[in-house]
Image (tube, rainbow, N blue to C red):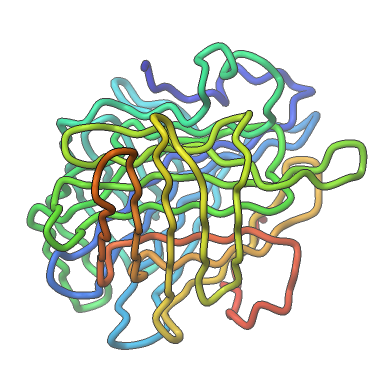
Length: 328
């Protein structure tokens, strides 16, 4: 899979959003980093870029959040995206590193992975068609990150922190979505989960939950969900979720996510054609998986703080404060 920015080829009339992002979590403490480089383009307008920085520490409550938006937007040589002038704040992200500055935070991070990229959609051809309107990939679905992040007078040193690097884009956000990423499982350090669930509006009516992603376990990758998948069960709010779904080869996965009290970040995502969604994210969530494989004994995996849980919605009554940064 050749990862590259989509926005440079967008027509003047197109509506587009695009995001390159990474997450990393301490192996020993409920401390995590979530950094996004995004593009928002309304029809008839030039694209604008933003850098978002969230630092989680479940021991101290509410995470640090900051966002910088700029007309300075491009693709650096050998990289994916560059937002803003580095002297006053902004970020650069590419296949092996991310460097940036946003508010009181400054970071220089490197990542490496032996995992092949993950295409969430079941066919590569679907990435070339107008539908679905949201497309997701993970260039590094599981990675190790090294470097430093300075926040005020605090330096956070990353030494082989597990994490991931993702990329998504589209003409509009889903009406409601969940992103789940998990690693750091007790007794299964190489296992990981990367899953997107969405409900979309078609002709004014909401579909059921659609799911796409994968679970890596014991040197095998099991695809989950798919366009024809049935029997997906989802219960979700700002405090966590319970998800049940099937995968290939008869696999069945039950997923339970719990967000630590007051540890979630709240953001507002603007839609390319107008409107917005509230988004709650906690990248130091607890995760439990019950995995059933045909002909094999069931497996339970637990991660105390290694999960990222994101819920996107239209509701405003979720109880998580929204960071005071717009797209202006």
